[in-house]
Image 1 (cartoon, rainbow, N blue to C red):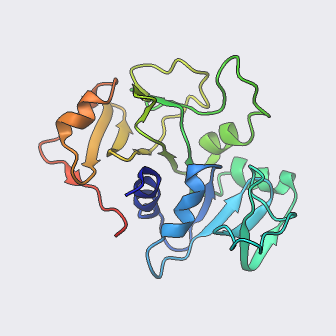
Image 2 (image 1 turned 120 degrees about the vertical axis):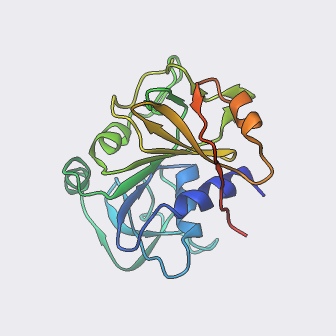
Length: 218
């Protein structure tokens, strides 16, 4: 199974009916495709839309209906569009149940770096800093490594998105919970061993006696 599907389908299980959830650009947008049957979640995009639904079929895109990254999205019946001031009022006011964001690095303190790489041109910081600070729960959805190098490391080397500790990290290999004591390995993906996860993680992991298997989409 594709790594992104493994990650997105596992993150979808973290969302509860009726929650207001922000999906970051890139991999996190896939989460909307894997909600369990009967779970209705209200997805928010920081450019000003509540009621985002998965990308429409090819040919049905609306150039005026996009997510924060400029990619086409759909809107559920009754969706609400508004300006950026209202959108960031929701975010900064603590009204989001959760945000799902991609990551470049996560460290042993649970700090996330995801908004820039020094020396690389970026269009701006977007809403990442506000989301990590304002959402009730922060879930990081990212691949475990990048070009073979671990992304879960002792200390972030890239600029931090926030000094707040994130709540959960989901990769194609594992589910890891940052805690005051350190990074706790909660689940491992099917066919993956604890030893493999430890080997591919540069940060120190706290490994309980029993580590559950990660449920993924069929």
